Length: 231
Image (cartoon, rainbow, N blue to C red; front, side, top):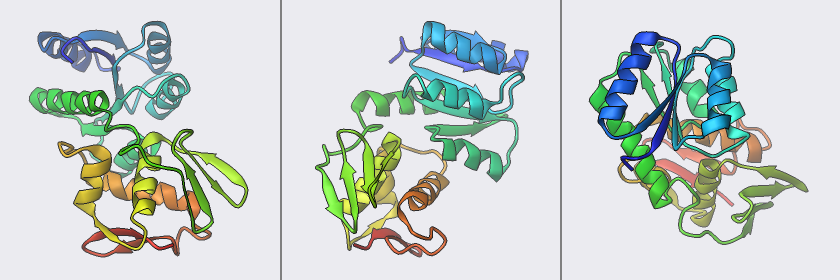
């Protein structure tokens, strides 16, 4: 893990230089890009094991850079922003970022988050968990090989985390799964990122499977406990 390549896409020179020094000291190989377009170009040219992506970038904003990277790879991405604003955080999480940090951050915390994400990827916890079988219930079919669901004749591809979460709930239909159990199973027991990640992913899944996401029938919230899939 210490030899992993980290691509830092950051427009502030002081942060860029500090990150390069910090990460190289920790044994990582570091690539740098100061604009959105250069970040996309650097990833296409050199690849990366993890991308540290600033949300506010010149030339091409962070969310668009993220989408361009996702078209090529499922590499983990940690979003970074100077704005301590829940809206910015939700943007990053809704895109599917693996973690989120806000400037200013401690170098020690950032390195810990990077190592945790890389560890989850290496252990396979970022992918679909427990080799899930194909499931059909409540008019929905979940295909673990292709990471997609079929509903009313429409096939919808899902990001790995969304599929793992939906499949876990469906496997346990009728049971209330506590929030921490869900987070441990889908994100890994060592995850210590924003707890709103789960709620954001639930919202995205509801938009795909519920007839009216504002009045969910299949995926229900059990206040103070967690979520349940009602088949």
